[in-house]
Image (cartoon, rainbow, N blue to C red):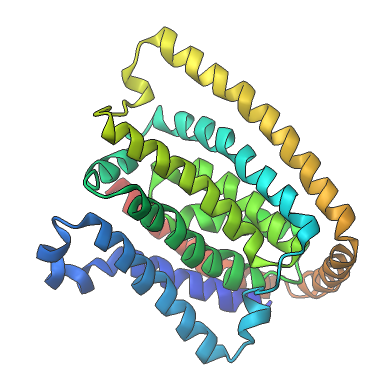
Length: 304
């Protein structure tokens, strides 16, 4: 439980940085006002990459083992690429559902970057988050749950991934993607599996957004279109998402089979952790208290 408590404290610090870190950048507001792309880059580095480096220095943990910096086996690559494209309809569907209740403010940010070339869009929207966010969540935070079963670790870190974005319109699809990415990393034991998926998913979105901006098209909230169009769109992407989910489950099952040795290690470690946790219920409450505080802060921040 000590390691879980440690990464949960780390997560709480990240949430506090997301909420109050803006005050650190306030003196540079005039620089970021017309350069929203620069703000996105700086926040990834200052609020994710820098704390990550400090965590590794303070805890003196192995960088390679904690972040799972391990060569991705060639036999896993086709499956990883397959999942990368299958998560797209799931993300679209869950994004539409969220958009029924929240304005899609991500599009507002992208419209402020309409002067950038495509390569810059991909760099800022896809590559940087694929590195910084993956090393943070599927690297450090997931490492704290190494002794937990793969299902529990995937759900918890997926939830934390969604909370970390501090943006309700992104909550559902980042939660789902976070779960899938965690499965990939735990099964392949390589951070590069989730990095590839994250990069491809964000690249598709970045490319589509860039092309729409070039055509002068503005994305509408799904709640703003006619009921017939809204219902058809949601139904269409629901069918696509269900099909994609079936495909992902099948691929993950295949990955488990071809990476059986890693799965055995994960299961044996999980069993040992369960015994300890059951003996110390109070420790479990303390270990997860930082998450509870983070969620409360997230809700307050979202309401404001």
